[in-house]
Length: 148
Image 1: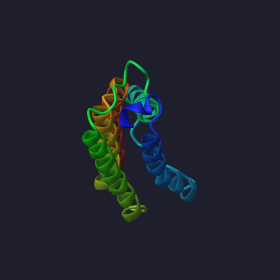
Image 2 (image 1 turned 90 degrees about the horizontal axis):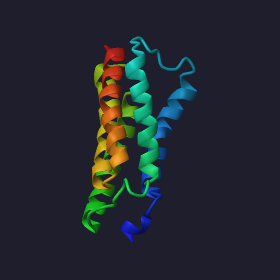
Image 3 (image 1 turned 180 degrees about the vertical axis):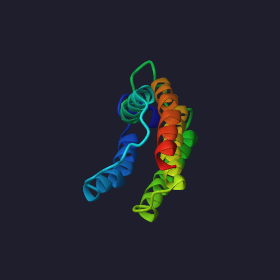
């Protein structure tokens, strides 16, 4: 069953939708949005390429670049760890919703970075791993520079 998911990962879609909920709520409640104090176009482009790659490759498995889970146990581990990371991400959003801090910025950038990289490794998705490696350092540095 697990390896027969082929090109579409419904669990990846669920994880992406759930982590987007607090971001959408933030965008609606804070009309002014996010104030980007640190500008580095090169890093911002890498972050965006990585972000959209991560979103896409969490959901879509391109044949020949994604080799599925090693076993049913690794699939179960993927579900458990990803669910914990998503719950932790949402909890930090709720607890620190109106408080800007370096902790919040780092937590909300490191958790999805781990989520994407772990998912790529567990699903043996080359493209998700590449997108994660682009996304993680750029997202973390942008978040940190804007929070301090």
